[in-house]
Length: 310
Image (tube, rainbow, N blue to C red; front, side, top):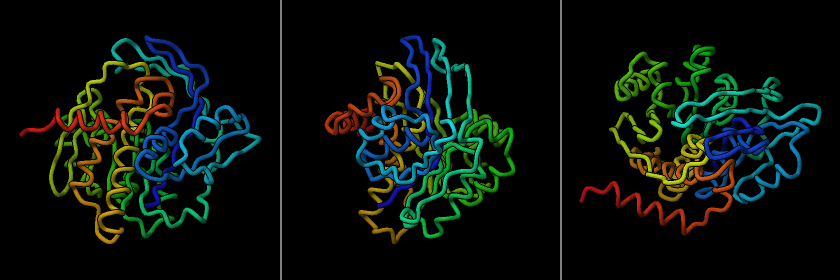
């Protein structure tokens, strides 16, 4: 069940109403891989600089299901760095600084031993970089892309080309409205399907998520987490949980011979929701690194009870 992800690995400096974390591991690829690794082996394709020290690498090593053969180190460059501050309502975030580092250079290459990957997730990065990686996996079972408002503003042509090639896209409700011109998430989701994907997952923060698929619709609430210390990476962790479940379930049930079904994706929303609810409880990957299988499955069963109608 090879699952591959490309995106950013970063060094974050984060301030929230509950504290501050200086120079901790972050990035879209990082959070996705850590979350997905609870359900399936994950292969990372990303680049870091010479400043990516042993202490930071040791955080990744706490997730043994994450393969870092595709982690390219460029000794003469610097790792992507980002600093941000969250305000009291958690929905408003100020960017304090952004240092592109290796992101301003050529994207990393995919190792040959990764070419048999069947489940592809293109974590947030420039859509042309995402599309280039996607072309290396013509025999994939499913490919899903994440995106953001920046690319809708500055690289919409490239983004539309990407959407014509992927099976699914993950974005938040504001980005869906920005992309399609429709404020209603359901209407926006249907408009996204007209651009090529089979499904769109629209994240609505504390209001849960919406799945718009050619075979139906589904909606789930967010898990009511009591402890929120740092929402950074929640969306990427959601994608990791969703794709990890899809990779594990599809490979087990169909051995990759049948298409990924609507129900697999719908179930994946629950796994993504629960793993993200743990991510926000601490800065960086600290909560995920300490998470046990019994905690994860216990919260998942509780969530199933919450959303059951019978």
